[in-house]
Image 1 (cartoon, one colour):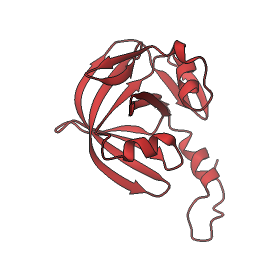
Image 2 (spheres, rainbow, N blue to C red):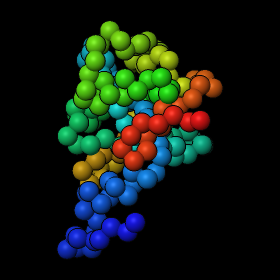
Image 3 (cartoon, rainbow, N blue to C red):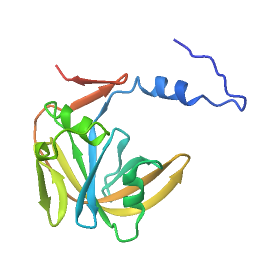
Length: 165
């Protein structure tokens, strides 16, 4: 289905753009860091591998998100990226603004950085570069540590969660 172009300047409307890119299946991640002594997390599907050498990833954070303010601080030098397993849909909802009980978050620390247990992978990143891009900021992270499992991922497609299989 082709959507009509209704923007006067020739670009897509936010609705058209979201509907189109919703056809791209993605994994679901939670970006984590410390806000003072407080653990913070934010669900993000806008995550991508950028480079193998050096190992770089990118997460895109909306300017309206609290995580944008936290990651933007000069004292915030590290962040985690937690790739959710197919059994962790509740955590995606929790960190996307529909919180459940905080005690149900399986937090653990790696060298002082909060990460989430039970994920299919965790990355510990050092903030490498910050790029303002429209209504989001792109945080490029240099991957300092990674671990992974062979469990199945949580997948996001057309605005809904899915599982492989």
